[in-house]
Image 1 (tube, rainbow, N blue to C red):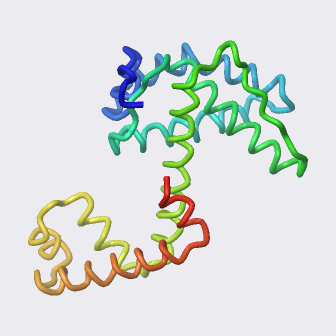
Image 2: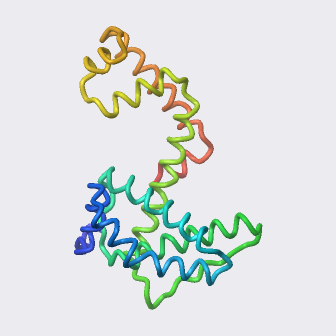
Length: 194
């Protein structure tokens, strides 16, 4: 994938990362109607289509913020395929039936499929992290959230009204517990190897 050039549509990813309202509006205007049409023509309704779009937008925002998404194909193909797969998986869960995803070979290129795989893997890792993070106690969650947003541990200690030494030790214990739970999760090994 290293040989693939970044597509000019990377501007959409950068716009999402920057929470640029003009880019976000542009995505909704240009690309969402196609997704809504697809969902409505595949046993869904407009509200379900909007839910799928919202989930994908949040996923893309998180991945863009993490700076792990380098677009090597048109945004339209990538966004549509991601929404399509999410809808078909959702539909499969709801109907309890097997669904075969037939990719449009003509409209898909390997680059888009590679990106979809990366994004789906990112989503799984994010969901695993979020699930395990919720298992932590309130104090650990608060401490870790602050340390994610404030780079200085001295400031974190000040904000929590505790000593610097306590914050460092507590953070180490919280991260250790979180890491242990993530590593013990049954899907950790399959995610780790990707």
